[in-house]
Image 1 (cartoon, rainbow, N blue to C red):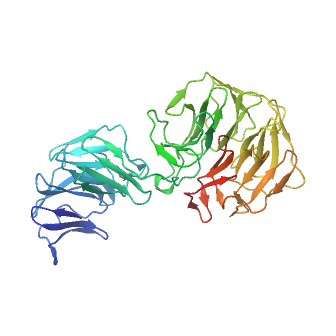
Image 2 (cartoon, one colour):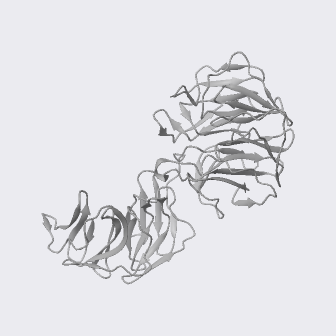
Image 3 (tube, one colour):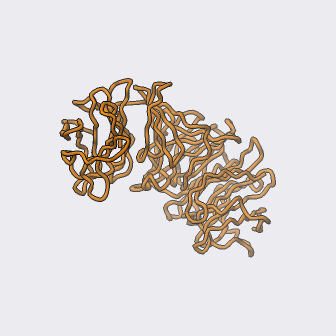
Amino acid sequence: MVWDTQRGVAVLHGGRPGGGDTWEWNGTSWTSAPGGGGAGSRFAQSLAYDEARHVTVAFGGFSGGARRNDVWEWDGTTWTNRTPVGSPPVRDAAVMFHDPVSQREILFGGGTTAGTLEDTWAWDGTAWTQLAPTQWPMRIPSGLSAAFHTTRGETLVLSGAMGDAWAWDGTTWIDRSPVETQVARANISGAFDAIRGELVWFGGVFPQTNGAGQIDTWRWNGTTWQGGLAPTIPSRRHTTAMAFDAVRGEVVMFGGSNGIASKNDTWAWNGSTWTQRTPATNPPARAGHKMAFDAARGEIVMTGGINDGKTWIWNGTDWAERVTVTPAPDLSGGPLAYDPDHQSVLAYAPNTSRTWRWDGADWSNVTPASMPVARFGAVMVADATEHVVSLIGGVAGGVPTGEHWIWDGSQWSPRAGGGATITYSGTAVFDSVRGEVVVAGGYLAGATLSTRTWLLR
């Protein structure tokens, strides 16, 4: 629904079920507009009032059981098809508004069968032009609302689901979001950047992304979260793996999934931008794998995602398979963490609840008599303050748990008071600057995405 400033009426068009009619509100009553069915039955279309040409513009939506990319204009009497050659791709639920600065309609985002779109287009009454802003709203590019801010001379676009606020100033998008809390995200992997003193994560999923994953980078500095797009952006992904390479001072990310296929690319984060590495050898594509920096040997250890029993090592330049006598444990849904007190990498196999140790050359089973029951989606992190490794949360027997177990190098024991909360498929790191464990993201009980950040001090 839009407001026609020329005629002083609100214009309502389409909707479910089978809405192809046009109605107008004059402040007192509704009137069905004669000739208002010309644009056909449709819903989830985009609607905007063009104040320069005094017409209501409708774009796309669902009509005839399919998404559309046609353009219709309503002059108060008749709908006219204005669809040109070179229209934006078909979509529904896009946001569209009139930009008084450029005197054009701006179209952004929307949904398709493949997921959400993040493109920006301008309509001048005759033709569409695709714009190329340097940044854009990226967390939920459909189901947005917009309003013009007369004082600032910009259109504010809001996402009620995520609390984002972005402004269009006639040329580009500007992030106007308030001070950020942690974004709701699951199937994430994080790493603590010890040089810059912050937790870093990339991508992850929430329900509105249809499993494709995200392209934003989030950082926690011990007090607040900051998220956004880096100058160079890895493609969409979730269930990736990350680790901080303390020798080379960068966060390394490998693989992940976009909901359709797994990846085998390697990226490095230097605190401000991502750089894709081009090693001579690439491990097979995978998702749901785990990585940990082996400080004793100055290299990153990776396993899981593919239950092939192989262990891969990153030396800062290239990947190499480390041939072992004992196959690597199946870590599908299980965590990996470096234990600095025992100079080894610890793995928890979720399907068997067994504990494994990597000494740089081979894996050994160190499962004690007492141990946590089998669970997946738990996070594991070495707490250098207490000199233990913590296993937190997960799903055990189909039920999310908030249990917190600690490993002292030989035994598991439950920690009184439980974990941070009932959570799984999030991330946990040790903040070496502030001496605390940070648990963030993932799901709460009931498969609700968590926006909480927990600190264990």
